Length: 34
Image (cartoon, rainbow, N blue to C red; front, side):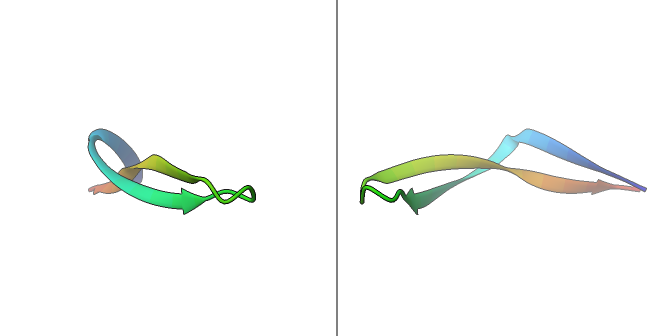
């Protein structure tokens, strides 16, 4: 089995940096291909 990352199914997540600014990071969903 291989785990592939599909960039068309991204999830925007907010991360706070050390300076206190918010950054929106797009994370690709791992898709399990059987």
